[in-house]
Length: 172
Image 1 (cartoon, rainbow, N blue to C red):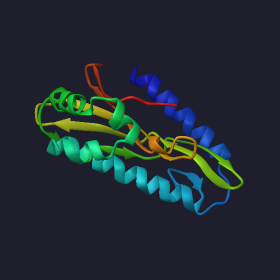
Image 2 (cartoon, rainbow, N blue to C red):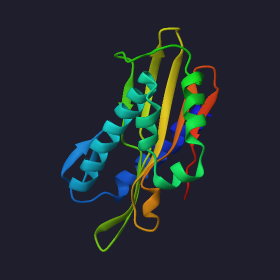
Image 3 (cartoon, rainbow, N blue to C red):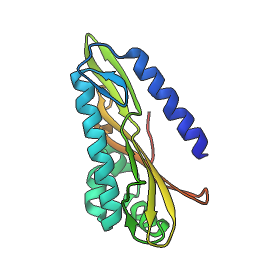
């Protein structure tokens, strides 16, 4: 399952790299426009915020990061509490913890983004009980057609034993 996600993220990266134009800077070796650089920075910060909320068991702050649609259709309180229980031990951010903010998909109309989806990951999350986890977040930064989808739609937490815990649900 984990391998499929990494393959999917790799394909997203390749597709995004091919479609980018107007270089402003690089993120993970990919040319980014100014807007995309801003989105990449936002994805990196959201990665850190999600991990911090999970580490501190801060359900309220984590819930606020989700889209209006997800907050209205999912039982986030129960799912967030299940995620806190799923992670065995206290999260320790180490030099093995990697933050990757480059999983992106976008479309434009008349030079403006109408859709921008990010799938940032945090890998190599260790706990004081010797467990390791990876987190994949799916988030709309722009969605012209469904503005209430903007925000985190889904957070998937993968344990080193292959088990998974999901918070929210990705909507297309």
